[in-house]
Amino acid sequence: MRQPQQDFIEITIMFFLINLMEILFTHKTMKQLNIKQILMIAALIILSGCNQEVNEDYMIKKENFGEQDGKEVFLISLVNNEGNVVKLTNYGATVVWLEVPDKNGEKDNITFGYETLEAYLNGDPYFGSVVGRYANRIADGKFTLDGKEYNLAINNPPNTLHGGPGGWHSRVWDTEIIENNDEVPIIRFSYLSPDMEEGYPGEVRAEVQYSWTDDNELIIEYKCTSDKKTVLNITNHAYFNLKGAGNGDILGHELMIAASKFTPVDENLIPTGELKPVEGTPFDFTSPHIIGERIDDDYDQLKLGRGYDHNFVLDNKTEPDAMVYEPESGRLIEMTTDQPGVQFYCGNFLDGLEKGHGGMVYAYRGGLCLETQHYPDSPNQPDFPSTVLEPGKPFESRTVYKFSVK
Ligand code: BGC
Image (cartoon, rainbow, N blue to C red; front, top):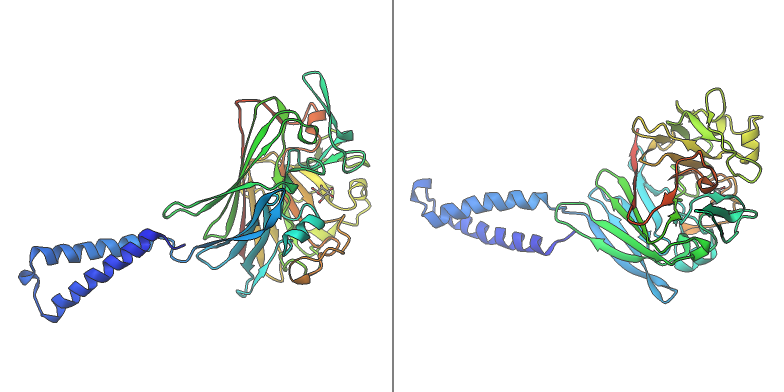
């Protein structure tokens, strides 16, 4: 990332260097230097130190990606000091591209995305997007708050899924690029969701901040406030395939989730209300297991979910909360969150027809999601942690996906 002050520092250093050369060429000893020349040498040493602290190679590019709802849509590329790239768009506050090396240093994009805004508008609505106001399902699209029933838009009959058809994945967010010297830049997307949008009460101001660090951490921070009591559950729906997005399925990936319980579901994928211990079930990922190892077991929850599509009740005791490793590429994700749950979804509803970047086909079970969240259907489940958002009490949360190799 080039900073104007960096140019100034470099010009100043050049000036001092010229003077230093003059001193050297005239073979002056330390004693013969005048006070001005001594000060110049001292300033040179200090300035070259300052210059090293500036992020030399970090780059941010903001390009036009089209227009939607009368607003400009951008494609923002972040290239960290390691040359690894994350691309974001303010359409749906979406992660478009995430390029990291494998164990041989070969870089590839490992998340599902499209090349054009048009493809986003016509394609799968949740590739890398932020989902809200309520991530995952609310049974029958209804909930009651302070004795009043709210009816939501139904888009996954008989339920509401991911905030309804016009959820936050489909909105154009405002974009700010926040650059601070020596700190990793922040891309802040914000959206003002009107009262009763998709049937939810309260005007909600949502903010999602992304940063992409030199340690290959994608940090996502959420902040939401409401002017009326409402419900809220916000997450990011990125699909990962550590072999490279479009390179087959994720059944050979190894997964660890630090969750001793999960929330079993009914035939409509609505939690039954039970918090079931994972021990002795194919849902025990407390130590690493290959995803495909038990996915076809004769186990009712796997049948109901068509595979894994469940909320895991995080122990929230150790870090990371989840880990994904792919042996061929050596790529690893360590995921850490402050949320009480994570939806592990392994793309059971992907039909293999979607084509993304470079025409790559995103296969059935071709990507996995670790959607950090509150539990699905919490507004109708009194024993689940509350998802009520009260005026004056902002919701704040943070999730980090760290990418490396082993
Ligand atoms: C849900 C799946 C759903 C998918 C849609 C996931 O969060 O758990 O049931 O099909 O989102 O992309």
